[in-house]
Length: 295
Length: 331
Image (cartoon, rainbow over all chains, first blue to last red; front, side):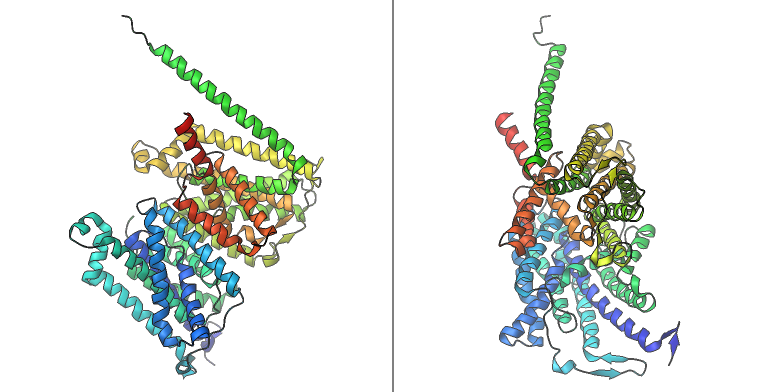
C-alpha cells in the first residue's frame, strides 16, 4: 500500500474527502453569514438553528408526507427562508439602527427558543433519513473510494456558492443590494423598496443555511442541536476569512475543512480545536482576516 | 452690585444635594447588607452562594460590557479556568489552604484574560464578540481533552478545606460569610473602579472611541486593563463556585455559560452597578423555579424568550428601567 508520511494513502485521501465535504458545509454556512452580515450588518446567531431546521424539515416532510429528497432540496430552504423573513419582519426590524450587538443577542435568543422547543419535541438522539437511491454506492478511483452522494454535495455546494458570489458581486440585483446598504435613503429615493430588499436578503442568507441542512440530512445525524456547535466553528471560519468578503468566506470554508481533515489524520485529539488555533494565528498576523479589508 | 445668587451658594447647594444623595445610597446599601447578612438564616445558604457567585461573574462581565462597551462572548473560559485551577490544586495538594487555591485560580484566569485581551482587543463590536467566542471555544476543547478536568465527567469532591488553615469551610454558614465578604469586596472594588478617573475613560471609550483617541488616550491599553480585571473577577467567581459546590464541570466552560452571563447582565441592567446582581438573582431563581416544576424541560426556550423580550422591549434592564422611572417621576 502506498504510504504518505506514515499514513496509508487511502486513509489520507479518505480524510481529505471528508475534510472537503465539511469544508463545503462551512463554505455554505459562512457564505450565508457573510451575505447577511455584509449587506445587513446583522450577526445571525440563529444561523446554526436555520441549518438544523433545513435538515429537520427535510426529515419531517419525508416522514409525514413522503416528500422526497429532490423536492425537499427546494421546499425546505423555501419554508425555512420564509420563516427567516418572518423573524426579520417581526423582530430584527424593530432594532434596526441600534448597535449591531443587539442583533446578535436577539438572534441568540431566537436560536435558544427554536432549539429548545424542537429538543422537547424530537429529543437529541438523532433522526434517521435514508439516502436517495440514486446516490447509493460510489466509485473506486483507484487510490480511494468516492461515494456518489459525497461527490454530489461537493459539486452542488460549490455551484451554489459560486452562483451567490456571482449574483452579489456581478449583477444589477447585487449592485442594488450593496447600494441599499451603503445609503438606504438615497436608494429609496430612486424608487427601490429597501425594506423589502433587506427582508429578502435575510431570507436568502437563511435559505443558504437551510440548503446546507438538506444536504447534511442524509450523511449527518439530524438533531435539534446539530447546528449549535457547527455555528461556532463557522464563526471562526468567518473571522479567519475576514467578515466583509463573500469570496473569502467560500475559500476559507473549504480550506478549513481540509485542514480539519488533515489534523484528524495526523493528530486526532486536536481536530476539533485546530480551526480555532488557525484563527488565533491569523489574528496575530492579519487581524482583519485573510481576505478582509482594513477595518 | 447686588447679585442675589453667587457662585459659592450654588456650590454649597450642589454639595448638599450630593450629600443627600450619598446618604440615600448609604441607606439603601446598608439595608441590602443587613438583608444579605441575615439571609442564610432564612434561605438555603448553598443556593444563596450560587447567586452570589453568579452575581460576581455578572458584575465582572458588566465592567467590560456595560461600562467599556465590549461584548465578550467568551467569559465562560475564565469562569471555568478559575474553577478548574482551584479544584485541581485543592484536590491534589492537601497542604494548600483554601484561600491560596482561590487566589491561584484567579491568577490563572488573569493570565488567560491577558492572552485573550491581547488577541482580541484590536477588533470592535461584533468582531470582538466572535473572536472572544472562538477563543473560549478553543479553551473548551482543551478542557474536554485534558485528563485533569475529568473530561465529560467533571471534577468531583473538591475539598473545601479551611480558610487560612483555621476556619472550617465545610460548615455552610462559614462558607457563606466568606463568599459574601469576597463578593462585597469585589463589588466595592468595581464601584471604585467605575467612579475613578480610569473608569471615566472607560465610559468615554464606550460612548465615543474616536474622540477618546483624539483626546490622547491610548484606548487599547485601557481596554486591555478593563478586560484583564474583568477576567480576573470572573475567574474568582469560578474559583469560589468550585469550592462552594465542590465541583467543576464542562458546563462552566461551554459557550452557553457565556450567553447566560450576558442575559443576566442585560436583564438586570447593563452599565448599572446593581443591575448584574439583580439579573443574576433573577436568572438563577428562574432556572431553579423552572427546574422544580412541570416546565423543567423548557428552561432554554424560556430563557431565550426572556432574551428576545429584553432586547426588544426593555433594553435598560430591571435596574435601568427603575432608574428611569424614578428620574421621571421623583426627580
